Length: 219
Image 1 (cartoon, rainbow, N blue to C red):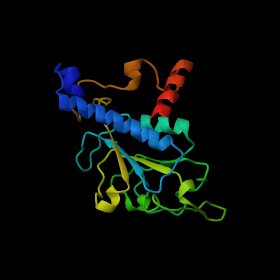
Image 2: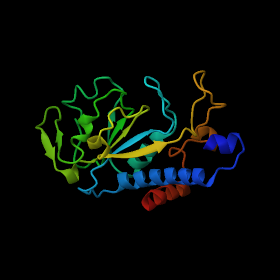
Image 3: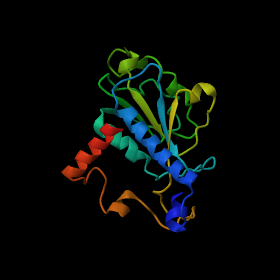
Image 4: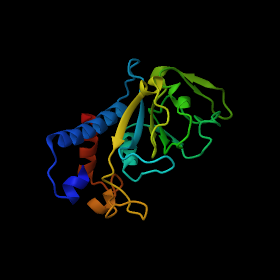
């Protein structure tokens, strides 16, 4: 409801304010989940980061700051990166975890292709992970050492059956940060750099780093 509050100058209703607070609590919970090294067998979740603004099929929103959430988590824990844009991301998977070890806490799949087979990822969320690396023998990592997975996407999740939803920890990010283009109705481009005058994380002062890590520990 940032448009109503900031651009229209209107006061939010109680329910709208509560919804915004719950969205913040959801992001904080996800940060806490990803940075905690404990893996509960009863909560074998895969974090799915998506835009709160729903896009039509074939169109993406993006530029909302989802990467800031994953970046914050991977500053605190060792991560393994997988680029998710290629169309065959869930087809050519033999070496998709090449280089992943039990010392990685987080598996980040960045910007997942819209029509990727989501089933490929969640089948190993609740159990052992099979890691096939080049030039060395295949490894089978037990659940506690298999890492937590976070997937970001600019699109809606295609598969929403009960089995999928039971394994997903959803995290929605609003379009407060956005890019003004000829294809949307935004009045201006808004980014952390434009708002704060410097880059997050890379241009933090020592005091800001302390506040950042304290915040994540609180989460």
